[in-house]
Amino acid sequence: MNDSSWGAPQGAGRWGAPEMQAAPAGPAYDVYDAQQTRPMPIVPDVPDAGRDADDRDDRDQGAGRLSGGPLFRDEKPQEPMSTAPPPPQKKRAGRDLRAAIGVGVGLGALIVASLFIVKDVFVGVVVVAVVVGLWELTSRLQERKGIKAPLVPLAVGGAAMVVAGYVWGAEGAWAATALTALAVLVWRMTEPPEDYLKDVTAGVFAVFYVPFLATFVAMLLTADDGPQRVLTFLLLTVVSDTGAYAVGWRFGKHKLAPRISPGKTREGLFGAVAFAMVAGALCMQFLIDGGSWWQGLLLGLAVAASATLGDLGESMIKRDLGIKDMGTLLPGHGGIMDRLDSLLPTAPVVWLLLVLFVGST
Image (tube, rainbow, N blue to C red):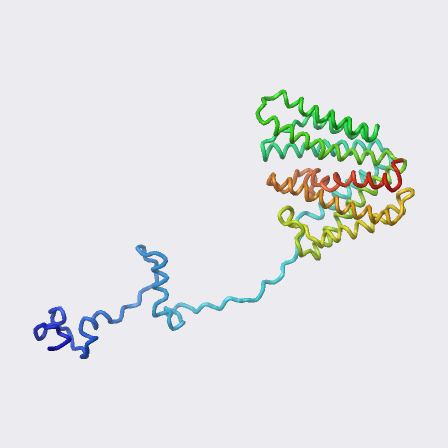
């Protein structure tokens, strides 16, 4: 009995069909196998509507790919991917430096002129900055969070707080602060009670964040060498910010607080401390009556810390609100609050240390 015919009549194939051609003898090969293993024509590699991605991947791994060469004659072999690192990109500042420098110089000239010519005019400049800052803060709170902190009592009370601090000192500032907070609570009562607690909480926060801290600038001015004290306060804050920016931009690699402000680095903080301490020693030695250079070192260190924390604090607020700047009033800087962020928390620090070092008069 022939194993390849399985009892079929002579001339019939495995399944009784006539044989088409002769095939080599053997138990594992017959005519049917020969018909089924004839070479298939090569067709273009186009997506099949009825196949999924896995089927196409299996097809791509067929015989045409086994040799490592191209599947079709017109297909070019892929170039190996380069492992070389990309060329370093030049660091860029995030703002228009020309506009920022121009606005900074103009504001500095206005402040210094008012400070040394007529001190009352400088107090007026502080009042304007406070009112505009409160307007920016309350506007962003309402736009982004739906919080309606009452602007009218904040603006009127904030201006009164600065003037009271200049005229009556710390006692006047505290009294005006308490009355302003009370005015916020009462003013909000004229509207429906929904969200009352949220609105007045934001209002009281604004009272302490902007005008209360600004009253310490006015109290610096009440001393006999008040203009020199205010100038020291401004110079140290600006020098600290400049040192942080310059050193951080050039050498910054380690993030200081990436979740709050990704642009700030530890190297920038070291630059702020170094610049502020040198400037503090010079200011205390040559500007402040009875001051000493070693006091300036401590003052500069404290200013660098407070300015950095103030900057991070407002960055936290802006991240919560989902904005980059508090406003657009100052080209290259953003809004007034974007310039007051490091100044406001630094004012009470400088006022307190100067009182401890050389007294309040």
